[in-house]
Amino acid sequence: MPKYVLTGVGGNIGSTAASYALEIAPPDTTLVFTTSDPTKIPTQTLESWRAKGATLSAASYDAIESLKAVFAGAEAVNLISTWAFGRRHEQAQNVIDAAKACGVQRICYTSFVGADDPAPVNEMPFLPRDHKNTEALIRASGLEYNIQRDYLYIDNIPSFFAPSWKSCGNRWIFNSHDVPGAYVAREDCGRVHAALLLGRGKPNTVYDVTGPEAVTDRQVFQWICSEFGDKGEFIDMPDEELREYWVQRGLPTDISEPSPLPMKLCVDDLLCCGEMVARGYMAETSNAVESLTGHKPLSFQETLLGYKHAFS
Ligand SMILES: NC(=O)c1ccc[n+]([C@@H]2O[C@H](COP(=O)([O-])OP(=O)(O)OC[C@H]3O[C@@H](n4cnc5c(N)ncnc54)[C@H](OP(=O)(O)O)[C@@H]3O)[C@@H](O)[C@H]2O)c1
Image 1 (cartoon, rainbow, N blue to C red):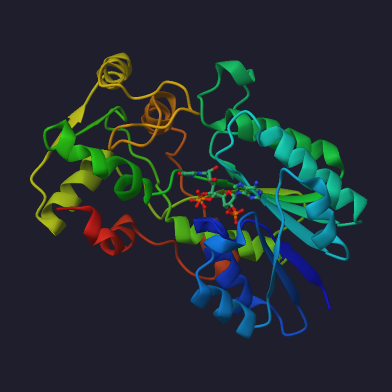
Image 2 (cartoon, rainbow, N blue to C red):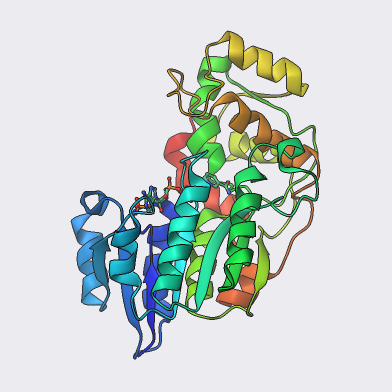
C-alpha cells in the first residue's frame, strides 16, 4: 500500500491536486492530505475526500514536528510554494528535513518558470528568485525529486488584475510589451502536481507546465471584452512608468504590506508578471500537461469562461 502525503490542500493548487489524486490513485493507495488550517476546508469538500478514502491532518511547513507526524511511511511528499516571501527557503528546508528523517524517497515541488535562469539570484526577475533557491535545496537534499515549473496562471488575470481595471479608468495597464506567453490554467498545474506525487513523472526531472499556445495580453484582453461585453482599453506601458503609476497610487512596494487598492499584488510582483512575458520566459509550450494527465492543457478561453463574474 504505497502512501503519499499531499500538503497544502487548503490552496487552489493543493485542492485541485487532492481531488485529482483521488481520481487517479490505484485502489491500494493511501492518501494523506494536510493543511496548515483545517478550518479553511469546506465541509462538503472534506466529506467528499473522506468518502473516497483520504484522511486529513493539520501540518505546517513552519513546524517540522507536525510534518514528521504525517510523513512517516510515505513514498513521496510534496511542497507547494507559499506566499511567505523571504521565509520560503526555511519552509522548504523543514519539508526536506522532515522527509529525510522519515525515510521518504521522493519530493515534488511547485516551482516557477525562470527558476533555471543562470543569472545570479539578485539579478534575476523578482518572482523566480525564491524558486531557484528552493530547487537548489531540493537537489542538494539527495531526495529523488519531481519539479514542476508552472508558467503564470491565466487565472491571475481575473483574480489579480481585472479587479483594478475599473479604478484605472476601464484600462488594463500592463508591461508585457506585446510579447506572447503560454499562460497555463491553474487547474492543470494542480492536476500535474497530483500526477507527479503519484509517480507519473520520471525521476529527478523538471517539467515546464504551460498552456497550449502563446498569446499576448492584448489578445486575451480583446477576447475578454468581446466575450463578456467589457468596454475597456489595453495600455502597454514602459516598466518604469508603470512602477511610478502604481507607487503614486499607493500600491505597496513591500510584499509583506497589505494593499489598500483593488490591485492586490505588490509593485514588484505586478511588474514581474509582465516582465516574465516580455522577456520571453513563457514563449515556449511544453507537452507536460498532456503527458502527465492524458488531457490537453486548457485554453485561456476555456479557463476564463469560468470567471464570468470577474468581468463586466
Ligand atoms: N504561477 C503563478 O502564476 C502563481 C500565481 C500565484 C501564486 N503562485 C504561487 O503558487 C503557489 C500555489 O498557488 P495557489 O493558487 O494554490 O495559492 P494559494 O491558493 O494562495 O495557496 C497557498 C498555498 O500555500 C500553502 N501554505 C501556506 N502556508 C502554509 C504553511 N504554513 N504550511 C503548509 N502550507 C502552507 C497553502 O496550504 P494550506 O492552506 O492547506 O496550509 C496553499 O497550498 C502560491 O502559494 C504561490 O507561491 C503562482
